Amino acid sequence: MNAEKHLEDFVAGQRIRSGEFVATAELVRSFTQAYDPQPMHLDEEAAQASMFGGLIGSGWQTLAITMRLLVDAKLLGTTPIVGVALKDVRFHKPMRPGDVLTAQAEVLGTRISRSNSGRGFLDLLVITSNQLGERLVTQNWTLSVPSNSRAT
Image (tube, rainbow, N blue to C red; front, side, top):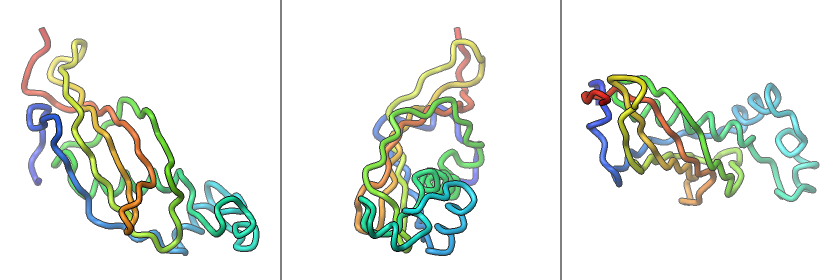
């Protein structure tokens, strides 16, 4: 995990799992106050009356925590995670204060770049879950990754 990874190090079906991240109430509130100050994130009474039935974290924060989890998991070893596309983001359940999040990335496929010699694309299905194993967010990532192959 402490080495640079290349496109050829990944195969379809391979899974990379993260450690855990606790979404404390303080962290949820500080994020939402700064970036998504809506009542369901900040006001207990308003949140209780909302469709969520209680305080929830921002979906944007869930996405940011997912990134942190996969960086910490050394998804690409020492190779930086460079995104090219983010598709099909789906919020299944809200993150709640106190949730323990984990992320899993499943390799969907790889392909060599035709325009950038020495690089390729890694397609991933990324799933973020809580401590109950409930899916909170699913999304498809395409990353730019160094390749040992050369485009022809």
